[in-house]
Image (cartoon, rainbow, N blue to C red; front, top):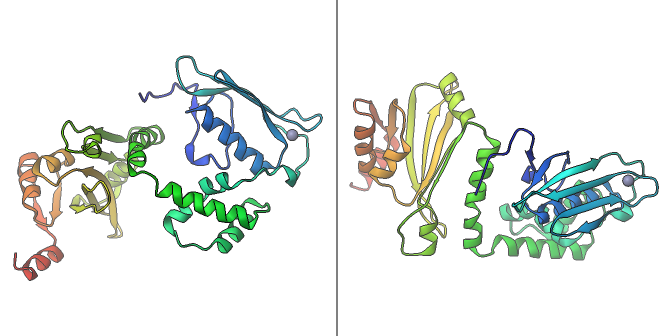
Length: 309
Ligand SMILES: [Zn+2]
């Protein structure tokens, strides 16, 4: 179960795993995560670091160069799967040696997974040039080829496994965005396992609501769009206009179906709303915001008239 950390503890930031910064009392979700961070440190700093202890209670790594004091010691937190750094000597007195890059296709695949997610057809040659330029070490043609293959396999892995990470994602959003609202509501019904996993997922960033209150016009446009992926559902958004008359995102949510109940749940403040005149949405406006003004999006109205609706 997710719990906020005390002030004296700092959770490792997941998206820094490929170029980590360590510090005392930092907490890692798992032993594997800590070891991956150490591996990235070896690659990015080009030092001869070895993990010399690795068991269920602690992971200890040190620089093997003669006279160098760099070392790190993470102990398992009592009754948890997390590991916390208890000892850290961060200064290397040794020199860089590209021999210790320790690069492999698995690490490359994880680091560049997003790249292949956006462009699965990216050619291996171009990817290899890009990787060498960024991490400044030799990447063989075979490593580049295997990295692409592994990245594509990971992207196409079981959607259920990926979907299960939604809970971790929600926790990460809460942790990184203090005073924001992130709600994950589990479904009690559903004909398939996938449908039972979640019913509603709402994200309202504090920074966005502050920006809205500080500088946007008191008008909100709301709309829902059907998702065509494996898990389907509807993506609900609320946007406003900033002082430059540009669209400003206010909040968003994922729901299983676009219904009056779902819209009521999503809407929680009183402004002038602009919508596509969807009937469930109008009912929700009337129930949650009796007396609020409604305006309709002309583009949607024209579209509906053309379809003869
Ligand atoms: Zn060293």
